Image 1 (tube, each protein chain N blue to C red):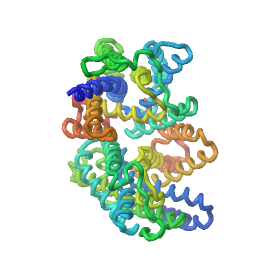
Image 2 (image 1 turned 180 degrees about the vertical axis):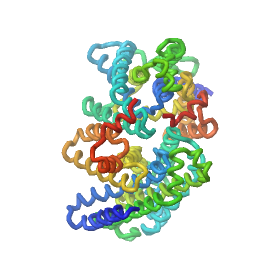
Image 3 (image 1 turned 45 degrees about the vertical axis):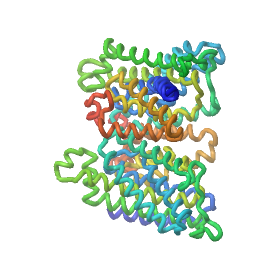
Image 4 (image 1 turned 60 degrees about the horizontal axis):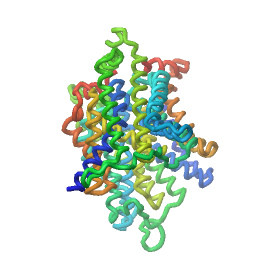
Length: 324
Length: 295
């Protein structure tokens, strides 16, 4: 990370640490969701951004993480922290397992195969009611003798979400500057060429997928405990995957800050629209995604870096580059 | 035995509709390398056109189907020409996101205008069935299968025999060379997208005729289109028909012998199995698989 980057990151972290003191509980809840989405987008970025494997099934790891935490806390009476740690390990192992066949596919085929993994996992959860509660959901005990961990409340979850995001950004930054990260970028540009210069492509892709899965599962675990009762439809919703992709790409794929910037921008925009344009907010949100894809295909972070360097805003340049 | 036969017939009939839903999706993917997430929204849009024509003018849904196809062709042509062509050269996920945005927009406009109530285009005959021994064949679904077969055959003839069809294939194989040969690729891409939307619109009217539809169904139809295209393979217009019938059969047998809640999981299991063994699909040409990231 550059020195300027470290300063900005430290300043942002300081602001985020002070934030709960100055916000109403409802807004703290919104910010918690922003932090969780920033984590999901950063995690997606490791496999989708750096390695260029656009996973459309990362919600599988979100759901797996959430359900692992819920099942461990409910059926095995484990406390929250060890549950969430096990959830991350479990998701990473699952990613490595499905990654073996799925990471052989490319482009759209990879995207849809991962989507299939997520949909399949959801149906497995629905069809295992004795373990997962099935479609009726599962409730984590938070009160009385069966509660294994004291319910942390609105601000408590904000700290958990912030901790998870810090972990995700730290991992992204470490990956970005490492030999491993350059290997992933090489795979994105040309996998055959990367292999020919000594990148162990299969191992690198599996590691990136597993890392992405582990971070996603952490966010899923925090989300599940926060929700108390979780349902397969909610935890394996395709929309969560799409949102992490949109956030990472519009912020700037394959950058460390991009997914975080994208998540903050889009999630807060979504919240604003929800409050002021109830009923039409999804229409406006769809239109914004369309406009952003056309005008900001490189992402906010790269576009503003280019604008800063060239001293002009090149929105139409990118349109010229990608149009037919 | 009767149970088995009935499941097989149901699967094949449902497969016809699935094939028609996926046909246009497969065409666009094969030619322009765009995975159109908004395809399901075209299906639902077609169903609404058919429903509205029947509701306000009393038009027979089979005629309404032609109108829906024409309307959707214009919409599809305009969308590709004015919008999707702008990001054709961007990385894969860009077109995915663009069409996802379109889908979100369209579905919520439908909800706003038409509410999310389930609707159906009523006919006197679609729900009645032909009895062949113990097996029942609903007329509506039989007609739907017939339309799917006719559309597939028509598309094959169009793409193989006509001048525009040849231009579409050329643009799908090598865009730069096609342009050097004087083909207006912007127009050809738009025609392809328009055709795809028209087929989706026709499929939508059939869906509304044999069952129900509502805006949130759009996502499901996109998903089915994807599975149908991959199973059948790209670059082969008959592939979608084979993929649709296979998907229909898998869904029917899983629904009959395992559990209806496992239908989608089974569809994806088959999909991943086929991809693992034959990455270009059942009838696909290997060329289209290697061309995945072609610029």
